[in-house]
Image (cartoon, rainbow, N blue to C red; front, side, top):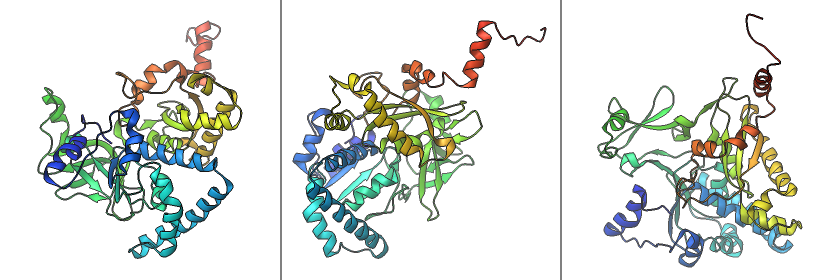
Length: 395
């Protein structure tokens, strides 16, 4: 599920099949990706968090709109699935008879829709995976683990969880032959025998990457109580509010993306009094919701501009704010007027659905600024601009 421009994508799809009993599958295009997963039903999937969030959201929305019998069966299966997951973690071993029945009667049919019914291992990497998303897949019976690596480490994993069914929320312990440390500011430093050769025709950038022989990843992490590595955010993306509070926008964005109606999120607030967000609505799930509620629309633009849809997303943002501290809460949001397309050049999202926050801020500057239109700083600036308020010492 990674493009071949990624080192890990090449490792998995080209190199590993040459040295191990692995059969890679190539969908014809991004548009046929979900169909290919359904047809193939792979035993191993290496993916990015956004796909796991999106697939789970679509399954949950489908369940909400299914019959009473199916919803009741699913709720019963989830109770069994959660208990089975707790037993697996505390005692190890195979699933109990009730868990096997829940999988055969409910979860198997659910997982088949997204191509995960035969998956023996699913690895998520590329960005932090929300713990709630990982917990849900594991309760459905998917052996989901998180891993962490970079192109600069030669495409090799820096750390990974040890399964089966590990506790979500971290990226495990250091991989063999890797030494992982945290700098004073929390930046992850990695030491290994071999890394990448360097940035193309940029020796200065290559030299700047190393600190006392250790590769500075640019990622901020922290150690859990159990000694595992937990990702916080990209160091350059940590924002400081006007009140001097450090906030990880990725943490807030992941909570927002966990909504079945939100496809993408970008949070801003550097040197501002509060956080705001640009949100991309999930066209499929929101359109399904619109049909159920009689909201007439002609396309994505008319859908996201409808007051009822804005109210739907507003309720989701309010729910997420209830899970966050006051400084992390999103005080205003705007829905993007069109869906993002990672295949377009210059788009503020990568093929692995990572948001280019600075590109997003530049392209939608007017939308971002409109969310601060009533703050004190902007009102004072506007007053000074009219000449009705003079701050000259001569006066």
